[in-house]
Length: 499
Image 1: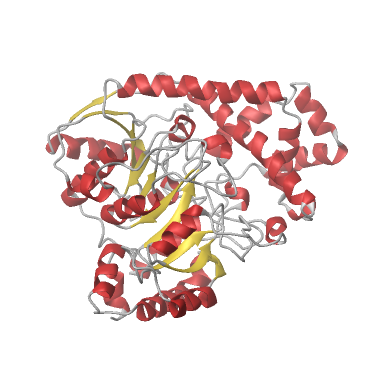
Image 2 (image 1 turned 90 degrees about the vertical axis):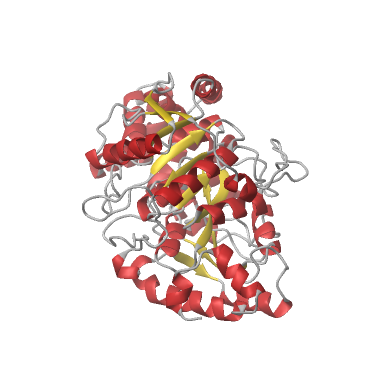
């Protein structure tokens, strides 16, 4: 098999070629490594190459799983690989001792026969919708390297879109699978809370807002990956049982007529690019052509309040992560300035305020549940604009400088405790989510959501649309995704520079 043939296979078909003896796992790994060497200087998708580990895996012999022999990249956040550090885009965390055991997700991928040959780039602590860690350098979008591939699974999306391999592992705490998928013309499913174990190092990530999953080029790869990864492990605090019918089979089942709500307005009240609106409107027209009932509706949720609640995930988790790293020997000044700023704001947030924001997740879940009582799915843009240029969306430099100066003097925490920074904090939440305001709802409510590559802009940039389902309804999302993939195929639509 040469690269031209490799590029036109998904993971499912590559595994079939290996099983039939048409190609070897060694050949597939060589193709993936060669392609990575070609794109790495421009796109920087990988922060840690694991060629030695991959070759050792081949020498030991692959597990006889459903994707045996297919090369795969894992994300350098939460997806621990025994014997290697999990840096999560951070110079500080990279200095800590290596993981003692595989994450359950990594173990299940290896048990499926996948050949793990590297870790993908992510912003520090996976905190952004762009991928620009100071420790490892920013990743770029194969469709336009001047633009972001999204985040926080941006390295994964850049690698898949540029043809390094057809599928990569990721995770999603606020859109971190769906945002990169939308930026890079890929399929990105965030599973339900409790569908996939995030252990054993953690019980829940980001208070349960984060889910593990994959970014892929085909719906059937996403369905098969979910079959591989789904299911509880002992000790999981929230655990959905494996479905009686595999997701791959659910995906293929005939789809009934659906009732679908749609909205293209930003929940923050901020502008939405015309291209994002067109993406949704064209999807609405396609859905109606396919026989579904589609009408405008939205959940009764204050989007700015939800953004405020979402920011409090950072205020709770970042200080704890920094403190734990320092206790294990890292230097706090090894973290990026923005991370240290968030840590200071978080330390100045009362337990009462954090608890209040976490309690509001129930309000959002009830409101979305009321919508799902009337509609099977909820359709929105995935992004409020096409993939942004590098540097767009970062907090204003003057604001960061002023807050940094307050932090250095010790006044930042005092002002935060006194409530004198409430407006600044809300502005930070709005600024950080202005281009990605649609994805956090599924994280806080624990519902599954998928981004599908159904639109390209006039400039030739991908721009996905998002469907949100009720808890546990990944099968329905995959059924509709398969129908849309057939009606408007995207698999062979590749970035011209990396086709």
